[in-house]
Length: 116
Length: 112
Image (cartoon, rainbow over all chains, first blue to last red; front, side, top):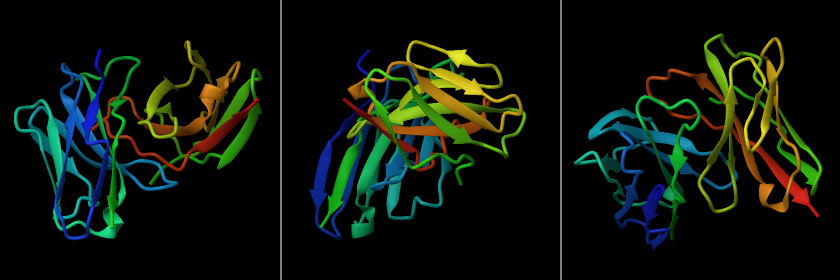
């Protein structure tokens, strides 16, 4: 069990640049979630996929953000024209369908973005 | 918005039981109580969940009051590695999206 992996683990970028993060879920998991976490706060839901379909997007996901999961496996989250307010930890999680009795979502270690 | 209320922080001595409370006074009949924890610089980790009966697994015990308006997560013998932020979340068991709505959680500091 390799778990959920995210790359890169850390990203420093200048304001106005574009960044892309990758998430590799657990292989048999159909659902993939993206969350954002700022310092001192709990994670906030951004969006989720069931296979390759993006089924829900939070209003936190502005039009500068786009997420894809083209083949229903890995996912990418892109932020265009980054702003300092985008500095946060971006977490990916996956889960199987149907939700199993005990285990809910498996989270990756996150990508920490710093916008200077 | 999160539907739970937790203390901001708690301390516990190593080897003692850590009892983390959570209020969820507006919980509805089909909602379960879930607990996750987040160790520094890691993603959240599932701990336990329950509906109305007390639950126990290898990590912790969950005690839910009879009226279901509050619950307590018990770590029976806390270790230094249990230092983390603990999140109490309520949501329907058969949620269409499965998304989790986190509050600010309780920061548990286990001290030697």
